[in-house]
Image (cartoon, rainbow, N blue to C red; front, top):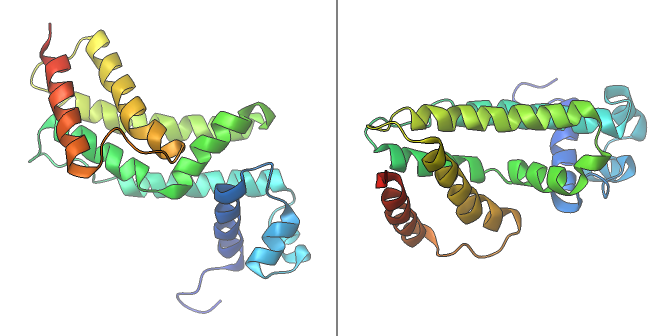
Length: 189
């Protein structure tokens, strides 16, 4: 393998991720991966014995990338609420993570347990980082406040990205409006 050039296995995974992102798990076939990756079918099958194995490896890649993306996301110079929004920005910036959410929400009933388990690991990683941010609030939040913070964030940030619809507002306005809303919700006792 040439230095700096991805392995065929890695190339196949990246190609499959693109297809899974575009047409979902059920809509992607090994034949499509072969054509898009410009490799032979035996090459795909020598690396991945089935589409499920390829999907599993793609999920592992997304999990590894998420760990890297979130490793140093907390900036102690920011307020906890700004850190919270920063974590969400980083999380939502990866189109493959968003595709996994879409696939798992729409097709999880067709997935084997190992894939569901990897998705749970992905969500647990995200929750762990969010919990680290929550621990930075000056005053501990009540379970109800944490619930409202998470629910509001998912509805305002995750859902518009999953369905590729317009967020309530865009960019700095969204951040400012969410900060105002969340500040008022979190200051209530």
